[in-house]
Image 1 (cartoon, protein in one colour):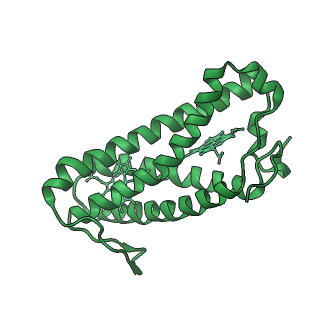
Image 2 (tube, rainbow, N blue to C red):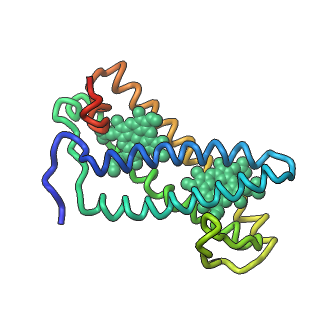
Amino acid sequence: MQTAPTSRYGATAIAFHWLLALAILVSLGVGFYMADLPFSPQRLRLFNWHKWAGITILALSAARLLWRLAHRPPELPAAVLAAMPPWQHHAHRATHALLYALFFAVPLSGWAYSSAAGFPIVWFGVLPLPDWVPVDKDLADALLKPLHHLLAFALATLVALHVAATLKHQFVDRDGLFWRIWPRRMQR
Ligand code: HEM
Ligand code: HEM
């Protein structure tokens, strides 16, 4: 069931947004950093933490998507909508949809790569996860590793675009869109 639209994101949407924004930014940073490290216990540790964090992001994204399907986001304010050329409105919606798609595609490609490379995942060393791709080194190195890299790069690019758009709305248009997703208590 959909809820009535309001002018702000709700508390749950705000919590999901900032928790996942932080987790995804850290995972991107750790991912690009660790991939270039020489073999060492430190690299192994980072690989494990990266995988565990990535699986956690996948699970939280599933919860977020289910919640989002039942709770429509707030409509853009009429004045903002009127000032926006139609392409910008489409870009706004398409960026959010693509971000959601990548919240699944990036961790799933990482999991598939790990399975194909022959490294099963035990989440935080406690919960063994199933391998859903058979061990196949060629598939892992020729397809799944570059795919994970490409999807992670696409995610990083979209996030940069998303943050740049937010900054433009905040400091050029000064339309206050940012406050729609900022916890109200901290609003100035
Ligand atoms: C949203 C979650 C995730 C993000 C943002 C992310 C991002 C990245 C990035 C940026 C890299 C470096 C790519 C490169 O330069 O080649 C990377 C590498 C890697 N990721 Fe992820 N990843 C995520 C989830 C996962 C998951 C769930 C797994 C496995 C369960 C995983 C496994 C790996 C592995 C094994 C590598 C190293 C590839 C190599 O150099 O051998 N990732 N990831
Ligand atoms: C770090 C600075 C960030 C800022 C200032 C920011 C700001 C915003 C704002 C203002 C909105 C609401 C747009 C509207 O009013 O329609 C929004 C929505 C959204 N942001 Fe961010 N964001 C940031 C980081 C991120 C990151 C890192 C991600 C993903 C990895 C992300 C993903 C999303 C998504 C998916 C939505 C749409 C939420 C929904 O409709 O369910 N954001 N963000």
